Length: 211
Image 1: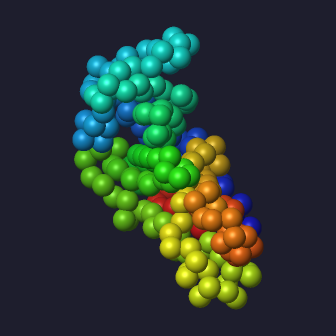
Image 2: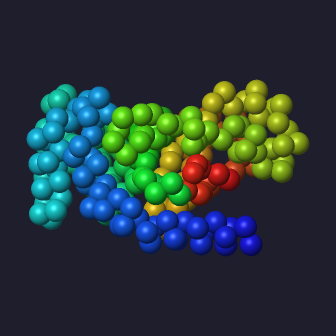
Image 3: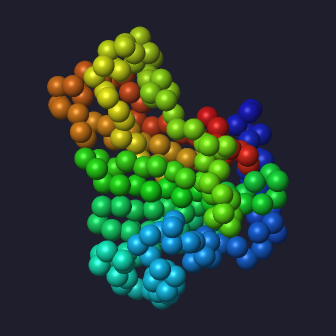
């Protein structure tokens, strides 16, 4: 019942998004992002990337490190970027109950396995508000029932988690996928795999990300 109520609120937010942020789209927010957010991309390069994608071309643009960057997906609420061979971004617009919108920027790096961080900004990129709206799950949230019973053992065997994030605007859900098995030795992973969840999902409720 609680999920249904939250879904109804989110649906109303999305339905009213066009009225609340007018012509604002993920494409526009990307184009207007300061270079401090995307150090490898100047303004003209971002515009070229948009033009290539909208023209149906897979052409990549040269970035500041002489690598190749391109847009991989685009909708009014979300934009995907292959920044380099080892990193990618998701830029997502999040409507708020206050009537404005904020920007969630997910950066995923190919370490031994994909590992993400998410930063949330005000719609004009002026303020980092991540701590106000998102706290990444603690190890305890990743533990299965068996893992809770063996929490001390798991903490000793798993020094950190590698977790990739992906946001779905349609359902307002942030899915976090556990990729830790890719860097653990086979024998250790066999011991801890029954103890760790494969995914943890949060929902954007119009104010912050909640379980």
